[in-house]
Image (tube, rainbow, N blue to C red):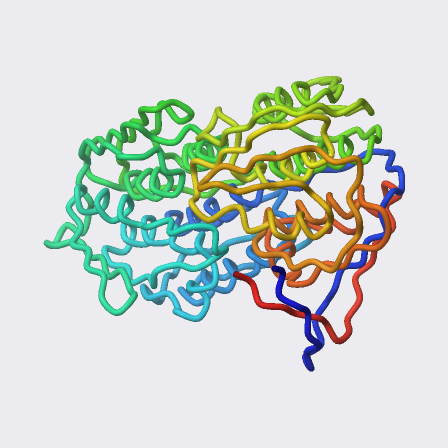
Length: 440
């Protein structure tokens, strides 16, 4: 039984969505959140000026700016551009109150340790979608000669000896973790000798980070494959770099077109980054046209059920699972969505059920039977991608949907509401006395 709502005394932002409005037009995709965050951490490697373009305006980006500034970096933001001066790093310990709020902040341990010889980084926080331990990061740094201890929730790492350089080595990852691959690749850029990372993650964001490091003078081969080889260099230099488009934002807007039976044009994109998403949309019945090298269009079409299993890239991304589940609630037939990456990433199911979705969860599987329509309801966002899924469901639902806990949405989507309004969606953010209920 769903716990009842109760009034709270605290004012909270609430997103109100009035569904069934047709959408049309173009969407401009922002820079990739997951690339921008790790590349900002990578700026710690560079003792000269670092100029980043196409940086999205997100709560997580602001937190990373604060973390880097706490280490002594000077950062200036002008629109989508960041100027980062890491010439003088004055601190090797990141503040707990900032790092504990965002998992991506742990990325600083690799470049900070490699450049300064010591790093003290609290264990990270973020969305409650699974354990996501940092043991692969730690074991990799230890293999490169670092002493790493975890004490009272803080990873304390240092390099022994007078040389203060990590040693190139061969590292095999038990799982192709994106975070561990990126952390170790950054650490290896300034190491003494050659580092080989086997069973590395192949995600586009790993390639983007490698290209950023190469632009600074790093020697990296094989990014985007399961084996990455890094030949350490003595130092890195000034760089001007443009962040890739966000494939998850692009995928979310493709689903927005599919779930509202609307024609949308989306750009800029990198089509190969969306291959698995486009393939699944086509399997569901949507018509997707790649118009040129950086633009894709989705056309209205009847929806039919299809199974989905999340996998590391180039498989179907876990960050699109919730959005596709919202879509599949309105598809004709039965299907199964299997989550293999994170063990606690189906908390949005209860919210979709409140809207009339027919979903059963068994372990890491969600069994979905399509329904003719969803109905607007008061909802709670439980994590970043779940919040996007609820927005999509609200756009397609009959009546009014309200969504609270918008801090999750603000972490990963640059002006999602503004972009949807330009397409014709009827939604707005308001502040008032919210309703809450217990989540189980």
